[in-house]
Image 1 (tube, rainbow, N blue to C red):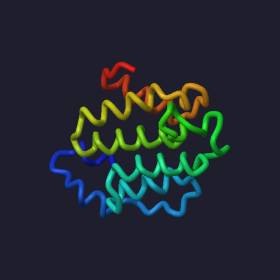
Image 2 (tube, one colour):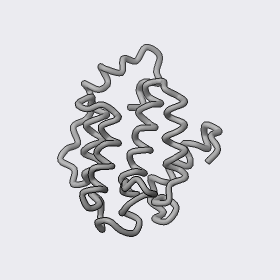
Image 3 (tube, rainbow, N blue to C red):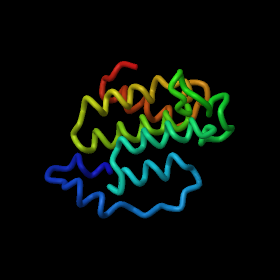
Image 4 (cartoon, rainbow, N blue to C red):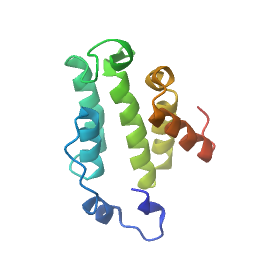
Length: 135
């Protein structure tokens, strides 16, 4: 999805050309892929995260620890992090810079990232730093 930065890129065409990577054993990645490929709308990834957390975590480890509930909303920390990061990247690819900033900064600030040290959390921080977004 880095092609949209090129002049004249057609986002719908890029979605049709997306590399097929399924199956993926991570539920949040299946949901993210379906959004990037255009099969589902971005808000459906957020709905998935909420439903997965409320149904018992949807992430490694069920309802507790790093992979359990976030805040009072019941979103799994790991899934919430990935939703924020991937929806931030998607928004940026579509030229929605304010949404991109909001989601990527949320990913960089995530408790899951801070406590897990997940390398993708480091990616979200670098992404913000390169754009001058404070987190």
